[in-house]
Amino acid sequence: MPWHAVPYDDSEGRDRIRSLYKKFRVTSLPHIVLLDEHGRVSNPQAYTAMLANPLDFPWKRKNPIQLLGNKLVNNKGETLDPAELSGKTVGIYFSASWCPPCQRFTPKLVETVKRLKERGEQVEIVFVSNDRDEESFNKYFAKMDWLAVPFKEVSTRAVAQDALNVRSLPTLLWVSPSGEVLTRRGVAALLKDEEGSLFPWKEKAVKDLDEALDAVSEQPVLLAFLDAADEQTHQKVKEVLEETAAALEETEGGEALGPVPHFLTARKGSPSTTALRQICKEGLPAEGTGQQVSLLILDAFSQKVYGYPKAAEAVTKEDLLAFIRQFREDALEGKPIALPE
Image (cartoon, helix red, strand yellow):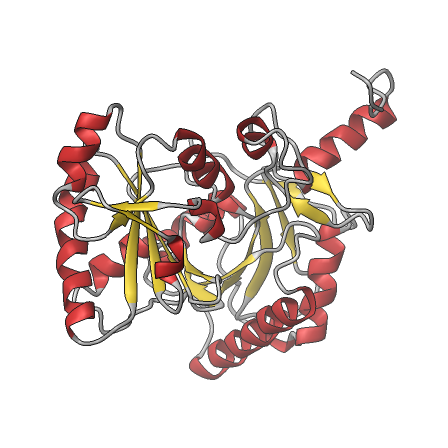
């Protein structure tokens, strides 16, 4: 290889490699992360893009609409320019005819999109197929009244799926006219709101654990256990979480500077709350201590949990930003989680 390498023949080099795996959330190989001349991440998952388009240097990360390529088709076989999507909220739908959950979900999506268009919403769906052959694609696509990436555009479909980190089917991402990903959980959002009254289903900065349990396996999560809190404390801590999430978005603009936690709250009476308390080895506060809230960062990737060291009831935005910064800098001491048997 005509390039440099991180040394592997000493403990310091191996520790550095482990830190890089953690920082960039590497779960499979090969994996390529590209940095610009300032050391900022320009593409956190560049391998598939480089493989599909080896001359497209410097392989910068594209917005979701750009990933759909330079031509789309409808189910009549007509080719359309992706410029047709301009000014619209776009659902990028990863699905396949061989997938039973997809077969159940697609008719619901068809009906909901029909309602949205009837009431004047500027909305479009682009189907990205995982079908095994073109005949299956054509039969399945005939049931859909929207656009698709052409089946023959294999590399476009593969790069989009990899870049958008799609790991299961069906997956539906909603993207704003400006290219912002509004939600990656479009399937669950639509199933809860088939009338489309909450369209375009933009995710809240702070989510209930039951609404986004899958986030625990995607990224670190800043988890606030509020199941022992009174209403006033519950609301106060949630507002601080929302202020902190907004501050991170404003200062970083989504730039990948390191693992940024999802913000989740765990409420009383939820089985998910009970399960996460067990995994994090975080029991309910003892009576008479005055403690109502537990704050921690759970990192499933490293299988560790990092507890907030102060009284969480009095936490401020500045406290949380400092806590997150320490986590990103590996300055916190974590404890191992309890893995389910």
